[in-house]
Length: 407
Image (cartoon, rainbow, N blue to C red; front, side):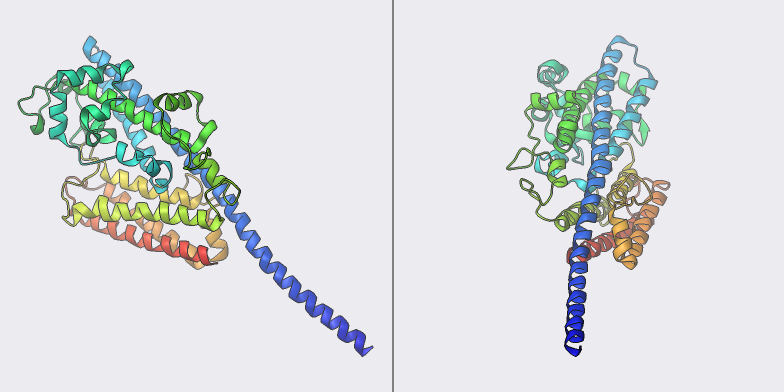
């Protein structure tokens, strides 16, 4: 009897030990499973829709600028046409800035970020380029290389959002019809007699180049899910769209992490990419460069979106991009399959701290948007408060990334 009881007890202890191991293994499997669901939600409901919106808005912007050029020549351009262009530009700009928490991948690998979003604009070089009748003729011929040759014709620092912004905005307002019917009066253009028609020729060609690069971003992430017309245009431009060393789109590569063919070996590695290479990276850029360079006097001219005076809107969209990445959707609440919900389940204290710092950064930038534009006063208290809040958010993001990697 004693022998049987001892044997039963040993079996019980063995069983309990085995159960503990299973729970431990099950816990790890459970977290991996949760991370896989988080990544699926993030890719399909954050990355994909934002890049689709960006591609659609920049395509519309191009069409509107081509139409505006024709209308100006026909004498039928109205202020309402200009206002619609500005509205589309703002929507496209917001989509781009809202994507900056996932600049890793195609945006970086293919040099798309600097190509479409470099500042400050070299207005002197732009004035010189637009003074050339040959360059204007080449840019005007959109069917035969005007778009494709924009970079070579005017230089990369004049391309992208800010080259267009200079043409359609001034001093925080939509450009007036009278201004586009006249001669450019910016001091860098003094004595060159550059007309609004020439400026719209430039803006239309640059918008075509911007559209094409945003199509490249969309196709690089969505692959065959991108609109067929966008895929065809990217093929026509001969742009690369797949992850190095394979044929997978960036979306497929991330969704298929841990599987053969993916460059991403672990789900924790993917989470680190989202948090560190994505969210932390844009925090550091906004606080240290976009705000910091002008605020600290390192480079007083390093001010994003100076002609529309929408710098703080850009910064707010950047931090909103972080919110979407953490929440798994374009919302102020966290999806069940999100990094924030994961942290709330496994480390509630850390989740609460991260959420507090996220809200503080958004609140500081929301207040700054309502105050003096950054380009007018880059040394304001609002700028300092926002910079400090974003730095604190950056610290919290890195703490979360470190904890997830180790637990």
